[in-house]
Length: 308
Image (cartoon, one colour):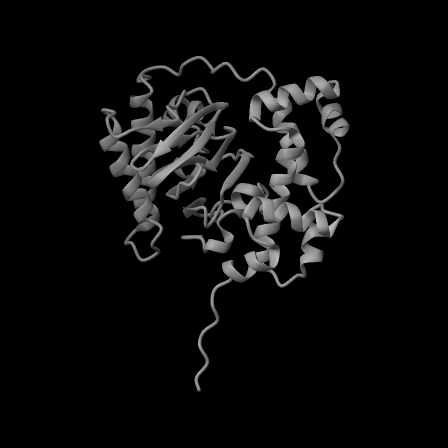
């Protein structure tokens, strides 16, 4: 898979069951316009390394429970299995290009000295990546040129594309070790968020069962917490309540369905966990400032003009 059409770009982020790229070329290329493609990407994670260039504007990120603001020119480095989210800033438009790649493409399955010393620590979160690299960083020029070469490989016509991409991916790994200040030995594993695994379990459950009724008690039971304790932990980690997160997640999937399918608004509401169509319509308009029908009309490509 090379450049993903606009109406498919959010799937790998929202539906983690989807693969990035293909088994023989596990790479996804994602050009996004904000707010056209999203105004908020809910917290998620994936096995792949994500490398993003902010091309235009400003937007808000949270990477590994650390909030930050990124602007045009910044590079974002998101390691495998790292929780992250993105959100439009008020009255701000933005554009990003992202390369999402599985480290197996760099030789993760070879089990040689390079794999054990450099790739495995990166895969398992033992290499502490700087979440954002700004243009004034001494490592920016090398990382930026590496990103541009990786991004150029989205074109299937690039000669020896797969070989070029692997070459640049290995160069990226080399640069990541340099800018992390770890040239000789793998560092000690980072200290995880105390409830990271439980929170990932909760997010995974919501993403798998979003079409079904879900209660706070169910989510708290997954963690073995009381409702109050669970809600406090979730709000502290993600900046929103678990129910707000779930509603946003359902809204984002409903928006995709409105673009990609011809299902009725009622069917889309039901498919995404809303049993009350009036509530769905009100909530959708609050999120997107358009009714579902208006949103579908504005996001669908215009039909080709008919010959007289």
